Length: 208
Image (cartoon, rainbow, N blue to C red; front, top):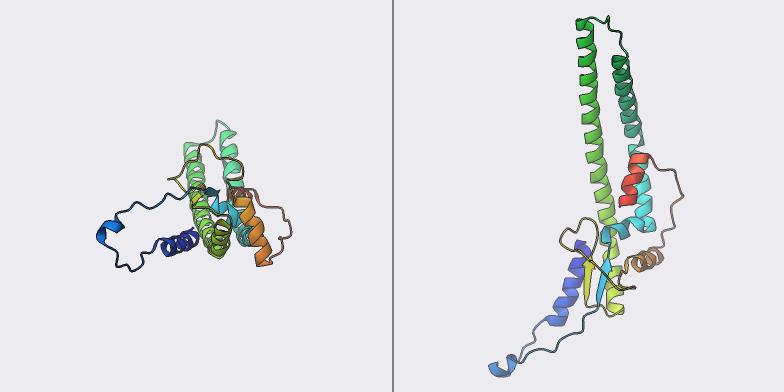
């Protein structure tokens, strides 16, 4: 997002930069002419994830974390199995044995939670870093597109942009897909080979 913002601010700065003048101060008070607004919307992070380059990055991260996901799935299955055994335990089970089983379940459940949280944190960090690089590379394509098409304002309507809520927009205002197409063409990166995503990673990729 910063890449686009920097690029647009640079363009805006060049357009609005004051020029040396020797005119009287009174002349400077003349109101500038209004510029007709033409607004474009973009879901910037989602655009990065939808490009061929972004899709490849997502696949690589999913592959990297596949072993950790398998480990977590195994730990979760073990905890579920122990809970079911506890529920079906005979009434003759001693208090000592019952307490021992409950401690085992608690220990394994806490370990599962720690492993899952650590894996999710690392996964999110890698995803953010990878997509962040793609977002930076998309910046020039976005700036060129809005300039070539006469837009005067660009708003990011991505999920992580809490400050902008668009209630309605005319058809053709959202340029997200146009940017995906333009960047795929300029980057020359081919679409990734489809692969079956893991449930957790696949859900994150869809959100992205």
